[in-house]
Image (cartoon, rainbow, N blue to C red):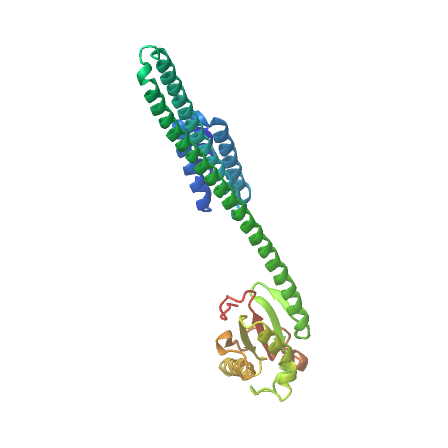
Length: 323
């Protein structure tokens, strides 16, 4: 049995992933129980069950690397090891009770053999034996009661742990569903910005209609154009965004970089004035280096004069998202 567990652990050593602490703890507890002759001698079947549960946990780690599943199986193996320990203790206690009973029977038999010659002392001897027996039985009864209470507590703890895991699983499922719904709602709310999901997050494009040619000041209609974005950011106060300003190819590189930065900052300032916290918004000017259309036509240059918005996939991510 030790060889089988050792082989499985050797397989772990070749893996790059860190073995969960629950798996290590369950393995140490099982090996400790297997080395204890009182447990292995009095509860061998229960130890076999614990070893089988341990192997299932190890296989799950090798096959899936699913930490939640492995934690569950490792906890199951740990509980079965503890069951083996309790069963061994109970069997030892039962053997001790039997031994004490045999000793009692011997005392009674000897007392009867001496009855004829110890008639006067018989009553006293029997009284002492009865008193000792009553105390012994009281102690045994208390031990049995304590063991029953301990088992009841263990069962209640196991039930509570199972319920807690079930609640956690349900909560995780609900959170996943909520996240999916939220992403769908986000895409619907921001559909007019031609939103697209990328590795950096949800990317939106504010076309050149927000700015006059060669200007960085927002047009008066910016509130109407940016209203869906403002509403979304107000409803999701932990979400962070990056604004990237772009220009067409007219003008020098340095001038276009400055103009792109000013346009990104204009949108940022507008969002801040609309109630969005400044720490949630980063603004960068990228100049003319990332065109989305040809600069040979007015229509293409209009498309290139834009501000792109990247909304982080997770609320906890930094607002500085690399391109």
